[in-house]
Picture (cartoon, helix red, strand yellow):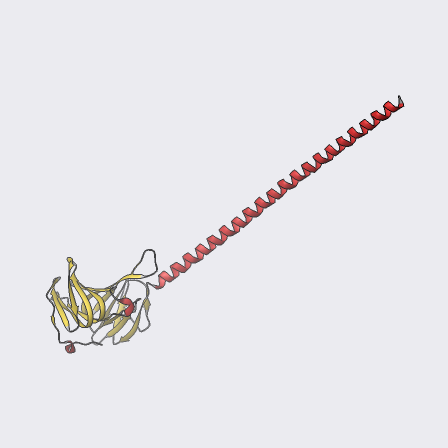
Length: 252
């Protein structure tokens, strides 16, 4: 009988020990699950924080790039007056004001010179406009590329008088001088446009290089005028090129 009780006690002890081991295993499993969940949460939080930091960095970089792009674009709209002698006036909107050397402008501007006046305007692509006495010239804002910070076209309108144009290496086929319904596109070199507003007549004279001249009414028909040649025009109608005695003109 005592032997049977002893066997039962051994069985109960084994069952109890096994039960205890299973409980301990269950507790360890639960703890491991909790640790895994906690580590997963921490990992998710870290990933979210890193993503937010990266996104914030990208936003700051994009904003910085956009700001730099706009600042550079604003500089492309600037032109300057590099020389003035005699009386020279200018205006954007409003009254005429005296123009002095070093004046910088980044809007459409109209310049005029009085008798014995002379001024030089340097455009963004280093093209030069020399306005002689008793002349009036409108300098338009350059036309910029939509995607890149570069000048696609420069335009000036000679209302009356005379302008000498020097085309820079970086400014070829960019600058157009319009006057009396015709346009002179500077391909290279040195040329001038003269216009008598009262008679609606004018001429484009080329000292060196090449200039394309065409009418606003028929831009497809273009006259290529090279050095020591000129074209005359009246009411937007252009005559054929003829030889020019360039020494008779003021090429300052």
